[in-house]
Image (cartoon, rainbow, N blue to C red; front, side, top):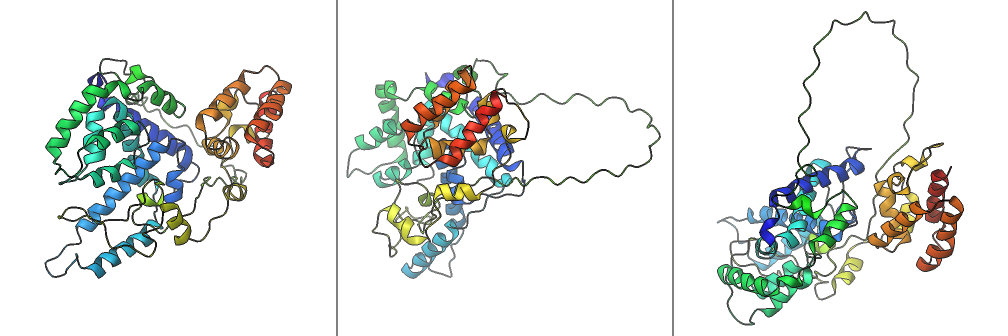
Length: 407
C-alpha cells in the first residue's frame, strides 16, 4: 500500500540528491547562475526539471497576487496585457544561484518520488494545488508538469463529467475511488528508483516506513575537536610557487528561450496555455498576445532570436575537468571518471537524450576486458546504431576515456 512509504525519507533523499548535484555543478564556480534553458537541462530526469519550473510559476503567481489595490483596476484589459508582457520579459531573465535553486530541486525530487509513493497526496499538491474552484481546464493545465505516471492521472481527469461543477471535496473523494479501482495501473516505484539511483544510489527499501535509515538519514554529527596543544615555533616563511587554476565554468546546455506566458511555458512543450496572473477571482486566461494562437514551439521560435545549435554550444563551452581528463591519470571505471557535465553532454550528443541507453552502454564498456574490445564496441556497434558519423569530438572524448581506463 502507498502508506508504507515514508514522506520524510523521500524528503531526506531529495535534499541529499539536490546537495550532490549542486556540489558537482556549482562547486567549481560557486557564483554561477542558471537561466531558464539551463534549469530544463540540469538533470537528465525530465520530471525533476519540470517540477522546478512549476515552483517558479508558483513564485510568480504569489508575487502577482500582491499587485492588488483599491485604487487601481488590475482586471482592466490593458493592465492584464501589460502584466502578460512583463511576464514574457521576466521569463527570459530567470537567474538562480545555488542558494535559490538547491531547495527547489530538493522539493522537486521529493515530489517526484511521491507521485508514485503517495498518489493521493500528489493529486492534492500537484493537480489541485491552490485552486479554490478547480475546473477541467485547470486540471489539464497542471497535468503538463507531470512526466512520471502521467497516464494514471490523465485517466482520472478524463473520467470526470463534462459540464459539472467541480469542488475540491468532490475531486478528492472521487480520486480516492479511482485510485482504489486502478492502483495496479501505477508505474512501478522500482522503475523510478532505478532512474534516480543513477544520480544518487537509492532502493525502494530505503523509502519504507520501517525500512533501513542509513542510506538516506542525515549525516552524523561531527566528532568533538581534539584537545588544544601548544603551538610549535613558526618556521621561517617560505614563498609558495604561484599556480594558475584551469578555468572550470559550468557546462550549460541552452535551448531557444521563448516569449511565453509563464516561466513554465518556456520549457514545458506540452503546455501552450497563456499565463494567467493569480488573483482572488477564479483563474482565467489573459487576452491573447500576437502569438497566442500559435503552438508553443512556434511561439518559442517567434519570441526569441535563434540560439546556436547544441553541438556548437558544447564545442564553445569549457567543461569542468573530469578525473579522466587530468594528464597521466589512470581511471578505474568509465562511470566514475565521467563528470556530471560530461555525462549530460554524452547523453544529449551521443545517445539522443536517452539516459538509460547511455548507462547501459557505459556499463557494457566497463565490463570489457581489453581496450581493443572496448574500441571495437564503440566503432562497430554503438557508432552505427546511434549514427555518430558527425560526432567526432564527443566520440574522441569517449575513446580517450577508454585509453585512460586501460592505460
